[in-house]
Amino acid sequence: MNYHLRFEDAGEAVDESSNLDESMCDIEESDDKTSADYYFDSYSHFGIHEEMLKDTVRTKTYQNVIYQNKFLFKNKVVLDVGAGTGILSLFCAKAGAEHVYAVECSHMADMAKEIVETNGFSNVVTVLKGKIEEIELPVAKVDIIISEWMGYFLLFENMLNSVLYARDKWLAEDGVVLPDKASLHLTAIEDADYREDKIEFWNNVYGFNMSCIKKQAIMEPLVDTVDQNQIATNCQLLKTMDISKMAPGDASFTAPFKLVAERDDYIHALVAYFDVSFTKCHKLMGFSTGPKSRATHWKQTVLYLEDILTICEGEAIIGSMTVAPNKKNPRDVDIMLKYSLNGNRCNVSRVQYYKMR
Image (cartoon, rainbow, N blue to C red):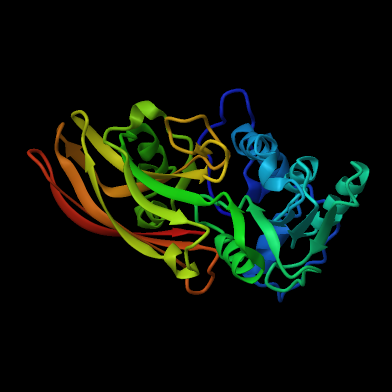
């Protein structure tokens, strides 16, 4: 995962997952690994699980959903897709689940088994090592499928399709998927200082012109924490997904947007973020990864524009965003952005392409 994090969240040092040095066990390197193999190997590293577990917005929301809605789990059979350390499976077991099947493809499955045994839940939680598309469950149906499948930009890593596969194969007719709703949102920001540092930097690198790299740099979305004071427009809902009903192809879409300026400003980038909801609870529960909400390890996804837009209050950036998995590696995401601004100080119409790798 080749992303650059701009700065540390207050008081917390967060390392890039791509730079994790400590692995939980020796893994033989081979030249014939697929992109999927490298993806699953990345989840064998302790650091990425530590980061996710310490994300209290993420982990506490799941814990509250489970502990405060025990009626959903009491005497039910649960399938945890992409179980990692097994934390969600342990929550479910403690909430009264009859049995939990924790499926994890990476080598972390071995540690999850030990964690389950250490905490005395071996009679309730069964850890199965393998891809959800390849393993066999010892039961025909499950009552609940729970998963923390969301990636950067919601859809990066494409784990959603694994959840949908499990849903179609094993979920009982009256079963529940948690979370069951997810939505992607878009806004626009002023970001002169960091755009100068990230993009314009290539104009003069120790006295050499490397501006040919600028276009490639712009095509790489930046996973970063955005200050809410940078937001210069409204926030637009792009796409809502009902995980209990959607088809795998629904994750590819084109959505229109209209971002209306709330003040006179410059626009340097568009910013995408997502919300998830658990609607089957006693009361609606969920969380947002937006700039106005408490920071999460997902941060936000920043899409820099080739043009710096001068916008006046009330003027609108109008366009559409097309999102689809990459054809060569479906765990990556391709984004096409069409936008135009016809304002008093700026007139522009452009198409840009981004690659989340």
